[in-house]
Length: 168
Image 1 (tube, rainbow, N blue to C red):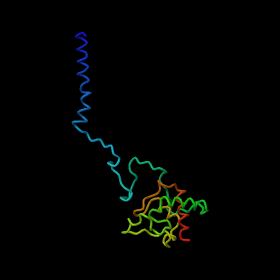
Image 2: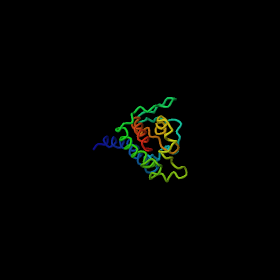
Image 3: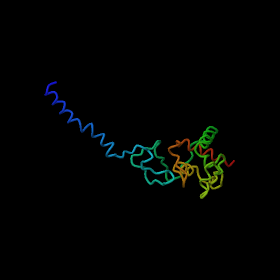
Image 4: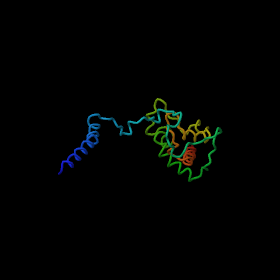
């Protein structure tokens, strides 16, 4: 090879050397911390609330539930289909804490011994309007997580129709 080719190769090597050695030094010597675990990000658990506003950049799954100042009426008739659907949804989302029969004795109820769960068959629950129960299920209450993203509005009304049958 000619001297000119060698000089060109050396020049290219010198120019490319920082681009080859730089990343190695950055990774091995400087040790930049790059968070790669989702658990290391800033977050708020549902029991650490209440959230006063939605986190910046958050996109709700089904949109924010909008309730009027007045109590919303139950728009889903309490027929057999709604009650059956409500029973299945209740077993999925509610029975772990509230128990199968709504007595507040579900498998997770012992975690709330300092503030026992109210029975869903109590007179105070039956005295509430359906819209109040809808709002409680939507937004959560005390340590109960909100179910707005887990259940559609129709499914929440079905659960309310089923809850109304627990005291019978």
